[in-house]
Image (cartoon, rainbow, N blue to C red; front, side, top):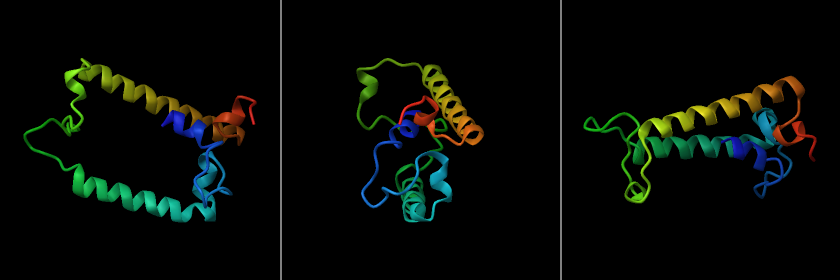
Length: 110
């Protein structure tokens, strides 16, 4: 997610070239179709693919690509990595709200 806020500064999906990067996209009228598509797509994933199973821990959706066989990562490591990613994105959002600049512009890059 943190990388996504940086990449969205220079990579634009066709049809959304005029949508600003960062939080400015949430208030831009040109972004509404994309936001609606994300909402519907996320809802379908939640309802169809990512169903909870009473026999599994919360958030355990299995290992469909069998990465667990080749990578030995403890659950606490993954949870801490996710927490750090959330803090990184929160920091980028707060800095954008304070400065009015997206993640790339805050670094002085264009």
